[in-house]
Length: 81
Image 1 (cartoon, rainbow, N blue to C red):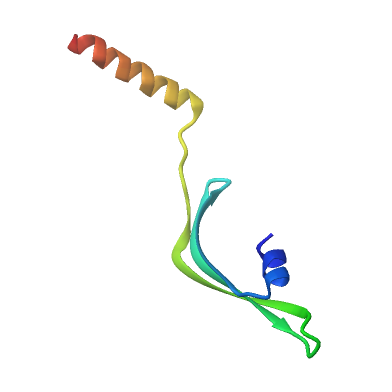
Image 2 (image 1 turned 30 degrees about the vertical axis):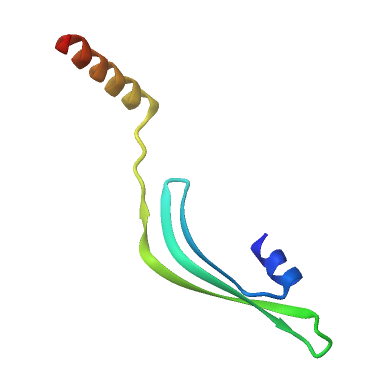
Protein backbone atom coordinates (compact mmCIF):
# COMPACT_ATOMS: atom_id res chain seq x y z
CA UNK A 1 0.00 0.00 0.00
CA UNK A 2 2.83 2.42 0.85
CA UNK A 3 4.48 1.73 -2.50
CA UNK A 4 1.26 2.67 -4.32
CA UNK A 5 1.02 5.89 -2.29
CA UNK A 6 4.66 6.69 -3.06
CA UNK A 7 4.05 6.14 -6.80
CA UNK A 8 0.90 8.27 -6.89
CA UNK A 9 2.22 11.22 -4.87
CA UNK A 10 5.76 11.20 -6.32
CA UNK A 11 6.95 11.81 -2.75
CA UNK A 12 9.29 9.75 -0.58
CA UNK A 13 7.79 8.04 2.46
CA UNK A 14 9.61 7.51 5.75
CA UNK A 15 8.18 5.41 8.59
CA UNK A 16 9.29 3.89 11.84
CA UNK A 17 7.59 0.54 12.18
CA UNK A 18 7.09 -1.49 15.35
CA UNK A 19 5.13 -4.59 14.49
CA UNK A 20 4.36 -7.97 15.95
CA UNK A 21 3.18 -10.61 13.52
CA UNK A 22 2.86 -14.33 14.21
CA UNK A 23 4.71 -13.92 17.50
CA UNK A 24 7.68 -12.15 15.89
CA UNK A 25 8.49 -8.53 16.83
CA UNK A 26 10.28 -6.25 14.37
CA UNK A 27 11.33 -2.63 14.88
CA UNK A 28 12.76 -0.76 11.92
CA UNK A 29 12.73 2.42 9.85
CA UNK A 30 11.89 2.33 6.18
CA UNK A 31 12.42 4.88 3.43
CA UNK A 32 10.62 4.57 0.10
CA UNK A 33 11.95 6.78 -2.69
CA UNK A 34 10.26 7.14 -6.10
CA UNK A 35 12.41 7.58 -9.21
CA UNK A 36 10.90 9.19 -12.30
CA UNK A 37 11.76 8.88 -15.95
CA UNK A 38 12.27 11.91 -18.21
CA UNK A 39 8.53 12.14 -18.80
CA UNK A 40 7.88 12.48 -15.06
CA UNK A 41 6.37 9.01 -14.58
CA UNK A 42 7.48 7.01 -11.55
CA UNK A 43 9.24 3.96 -12.97
CA UNK A 44 10.83 2.53 -9.83
CA UNK A 45 10.43 2.81 -6.08
CA UNK A 46 13.57 2.01 -4.14
CA UNK A 47 13.54 1.30 -0.45
CA UNK A 48 16.02 1.21 2.41
CA UNK A 49 15.57 -0.42 5.81
CA UNK A 50 17.41 0.24 9.06
CA UNK A 51 16.78 -2.25 11.85
CA UNK A 52 16.43 -0.61 15.28
CA UNK A 53 16.19 -3.90 17.15
CA UNK A 54 16.92 -7.47 16.20
CA UNK A 55 13.80 -9.44 15.30
CA UNK A 56 12.69 -11.33 18.40
CA UNK A 57 10.13 -13.94 19.34
CA UNK A 58 7.35 -12.56 21.52
CA UNK A 59 5.96 -15.13 23.91
CA UNK A 60 2.21 -14.91 24.16
CA UNK A 61 0.55 -16.80 27.02
CA UNK A 62 -1.94 -19.46 26.03
CA UNK A 63 -5.63 -19.04 26.71
CA UNK A 64 -5.42 -21.61 29.50
CA UNK A 65 -2.61 -19.66 31.19
CA UNK A 66 -4.65 -16.43 31.01
CA UNK A 67 -7.68 -18.17 32.55
CA UNK A 68 -5.51 -19.61 35.33
CA UNK A 69 -3.89 -16.22 36.08
CA UNK A 70 -7.28 -14.48 36.15
CA UNK A 71 -8.63 -17.10 38.57
CA UNK A 72 -5.55 -16.65 40.75
CA UNK A 73 -5.99 -12.85 40.74
CA UNK A 74 -9.69 -13.26 41.66
CA UNK A 75 -8.78 -15.54 44.56
CA UNK A 76 -6.28 -12.94 45.86
CA UNK A 77 -8.99 -10.27 45.73
CA UNK A 78 -11.41 -12.54 47.63
CA UNK A 79 -8.71 -13.39 50.19
CA UNK A 80 -7.98 -9.70 50.76
CA UNK A 81 -11.67 -8.90 51.35
